[in-house]
Picture: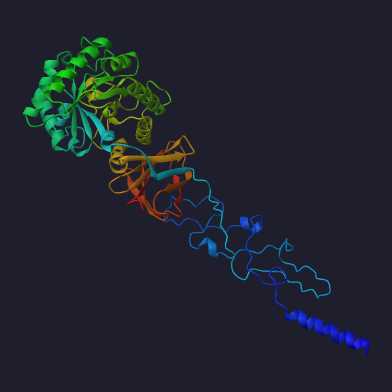
Length: 516
């Protein structure tokens, strides 16, 4: 009888315990929060490949990342098998029957997913502007006044169709040029909507009245010239420049420059007069800045890397940085302009004759010019008259002998269409893969110009911040086999990222219209 009563009493206790309320953490089902030290906190869902319709584009580099089609907070988190003792086992209670239950979340556990994308090897930050640039000035060209006076001649297109920003013209006396040819060239340049820069040539740079008369002359014929350069490469004696009494004499050149500057500014204070247009940077250049830095409106020099710098386009950077440091040191305000308005002008640049480059060279040179602080550049030159008229063995021409365009011609198109007017912060992990990011302030358009200088294609993870995360990107390719530059793909960013293969010795532009 006693045994029966004990059995009944035990049954009664078990029945009562089943009616007790469940306590969280003791045999109950709860909504658990993932511990920060749990293996769950480091698990990530695999990311689908970046969509693309391009045969050139490549799949993203291996490595999981945040998916783009599912909010992170709604992903079901896996439940670890161990350890369960932290929250999944009921602790035994003396005198009470123990119920053991492994707890599982009843709803997906919210968690802050760690993004694990492959590192971007090229980044541009559209919302981090560095400084303004004027793309027209990087479309400058040195052109013989006779060619502009008589249209295209044997040199391909009519120069008026190039859409250069500035055209650097030689004033008389120079070789066989005549005043009428100079007048006609200035008219054609102005009628094309461009800016002529007239070079006051030897020996007239030592005649301030004559220089001032040229300012007035173009105003009188209804085609005022705004930019004048005093002399050309007066630091050397060379057959390309008619010798004058000031060649190689920096103090005398600076004295003549100051006299010409004062006379020309008196004729028209709005014009801009600059120099010294030296063939290279040295004592002549610094002497000029010391003696004329309080007058000049722009400071000009020439650089035909790699003649002076055998490592090629890097030479543009070093010389530009050096020139910029001297301008900052010696230029001062005057009554006509502030120091901040004086610009650094690379008046002539091109490749050395013995190192004819491929097309990507031209934009890599522009890259180093802009990075180093050049404000304005004018490439030399577009025709073959050096070879044809003087028997030189090289050609700086943009044209083949039959008048057809060379690949290098189209560097102007890239500069004109994609350089924009503001430089933004850009980074590259490879000094042979250059990245130049720019933005057009009026429209918000953003362009990332990437130049692969290597002789092999290279795949890069590219990030464009400051635009919509899924913005469409127009991809434009240009190289020695693909010209003129043309659209290759239309790709969408995925969380501001994409992966793309840049062909060997090529320029690829990633263009985002309208920013956000």
